[in-house]
Length: 229
Image (cartoon, rainbow, N blue to C red; front, side, top):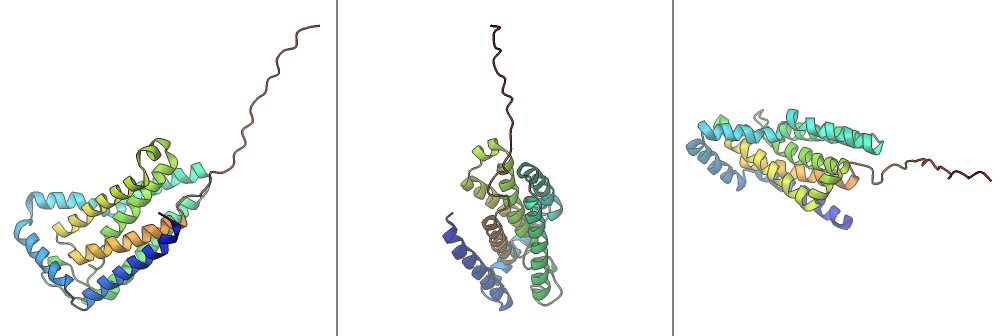
């Protein structure tokens, strides 16, 4: 993506998240979709295999799980590039996302659909979905660090393929939370949008140094033996 388009993308994502938040706070149309999907989950996907599958999918966005490959690969990248940048960026993103998510959850106070009611400013922590955000941000960065430390991964995982994989994993994590009735549809959509916003800002900043460090390799030069005169 051209760097000139990044500000437009960031602005569009920020506007989309603001619109979703305003719609939820104003009891807008998207909350009708929330209730319809909640009814489908309660009527057709409650318990059994759907619950097991939803739980497995939701783990793809569970911070305690996704942070492990993120930190490990950031450490490998830091070692390869001889820079703390990958680790510092990862830490900054994790802390920043946690602060933003907790702030919005507290301000909106939306209760989860499993409560059987859709209320805001009621002490809930449903909006936005932290699982959806973490799935986008953490797996997106995991793939970036992976291609930065492995030439084989770099050849196999082009930029478009990395984005597709990140989107697929984030989709699974979000759907899992909806199937479990832990989040409303709009919570998950807002999480995907906010996660994409954070990921693109992070990629624009650069999770790894743009150049490899200069290394000095001394090659031993052996002069051919001079035959005796």
